[in-house]
Image (cartoon, rainbow, N blue to C red; front, side):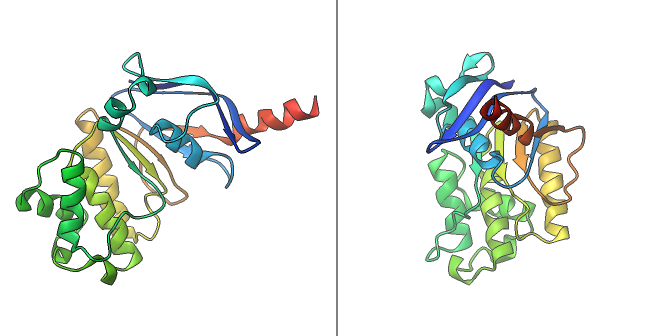
Length: 214
């Protein structure tokens, strides 16, 4: 189980959200919605341990998730807005690098299998600098398959993807959840996340305005 209790986020001097709670069971999905600036990316970074909450706590299986950041990092994949594709490395080398960082299987068979999930196997020998935005996104997503982790944190994962690629992402998420994995994502696209819990971040950002007017 992954939970957040009474989370408050402050960026600079701005209160982004406060009093935010969520809970996701094994096999569950949490979809973050809200206007730009509401704090979706900030919450995902907080979940990944990249941003410290001003108050509140994150729990992983009833333990404090952020007490041991190294252990927490081993439990998750975080995919942000920027695709971590090195221009001088081939697609296969890029995914192999990330699999190695995560202690995953770096065999060519495993890397090609991960690329195939997002229909990118044929790009294996192509240098990163020659990839389109959509291809880079698919390669970046392949690393979450190459080195499995129970928690996927995906910030706008459908950016630059066409409908066929979004369908592949749908399928990957469904399979991950069927194996007991947890997915938290933000998206503006039409992605079919079955039985997902929707969390509107603006519900917690509105408290800032109410408190400021009091």
